Length: 283
Image 1 (tube, one colour):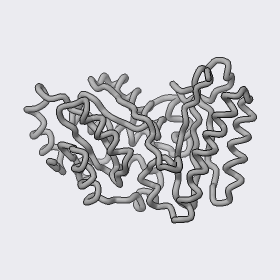
Image 2: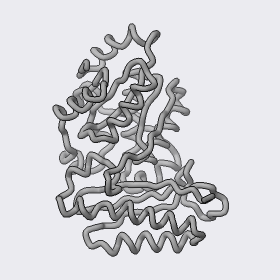
Image 3: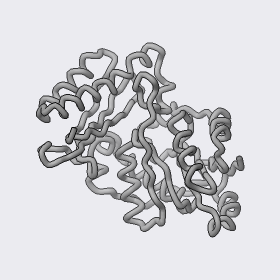
Image 4: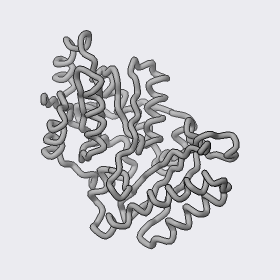
């Protein structure tokens, strides 16, 4: 696996390949897990060349403490990427990605004002900025993201459309641990006791989905999920939304939807866990 740490170096390497090779791209912030590897493996199946990036992007963190504590495990990440046949790793220095302060801002409209956007001001501006930079640097044919970050996926979809990137967005299902916990780099910050409790988030989502499929009202489902989370003393509830799958706007009439997204964020001490579940109401 080739490793590059500057924009100039990876651009020079990729330039002669762009006309003959189909490139799949998997952008990450490192601390890799099986969910990331599933994205790389899928990219390997459908492209000639797979590029992964590892960059803990400072502009998408609105909490300096969260940025400082974000796990960084480069040696292990490199070994994992090599194990699934990744061809190229781009892991740039912060000063290479941001040689000067960013003076422009991206606005994704309503999709960035709800859920993650409401609680993490400026987060999606930072996400959009760094992904746009990476797209310009790598120039992939396809980009691979995981459904666990559903709102991020919609933001990237809008970025591709609004800025006419000639890139196909591939969204892969959330990869979970055997007990249902969505795989996340943040999971490694959980204590052993917290790790045993954390799967209750997904269990509550599943039970809420079953309620909706059985004909329960929006309010009944909302109250049920909230009660399940509040019943666990180690959880600190942040949000739960029953949302439009395309826009993430709050659903007000279930009869108008064939599918909805259940989206949540829950704290365990300082560790913030997000998850979502897509519910088919036709079942």
